[in-house]
Each structure stands twice: as C-alpha cells, then as structure tokens.
Image (cartoon, rainbow, N blue to C red; front, side, top):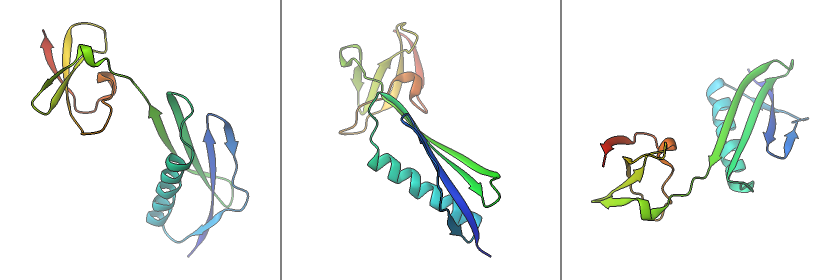
Length: 127
C-alpha cells in the first residue's frame, strides 16, 4: 500500500517545505528516495562556506516525523609542509596541534581531510 510522505529540506540558507509530497510503497523505497534527494542536494547545492549541512526531514501524511537525514560538508585544509608521505600513506599532524602524527590513506586527486575528521586514522605516536 502506498503512503504519501513529505520531504522538507533545510540548509544554511533556510527551509524549503515540501507542499506536495510523494507516494512511496515501502520503507526501503523511502530510504532510497531520501538518498536520491541527498545526492541531488550534494550535486546541485554546492556549499558556499567551508562548513555546510543539508538536511532532509521526512514526515508522513499526518505530519508525524518519520526520519531526519543530514549531509555535512566540512572542509579542512592541510598544510602539506607539516605532512610526510610514506608509501601510499599521508602522515598528518595531530588535531591538537602537537607533534603526534596520524596516518591516513592517500586518495589520488583528493584533498586530505583534517586528522580529527579522518575516519579510521591511526595514531602513530609522537615524532
């Protein structure tokens, strides 16, 4: 059975409520629809600041909240003079400003994230 859901959008510029809604058959379809919306936001509404969030809030036809999904864009520049490349790993300075280095995978063509935002980074100890 189809149910109508409303996908309200929020970003740094404000709120865009969904007045029409959309019929969705199942929960997996609802999750896919939110993912498509978030991917569209990421492509179409490029951030204008270094830190930006975009949120999709889903409500049912009675107005009850169903889900909230947030996409965060956090840009952190890396001072490459403070980093070392070892094999295919980039050693980044510790987020606390100390001399501890963290290890992050190098992705060709990508700008490395801040160590405090690097998932799976391994502390290598003081140097």
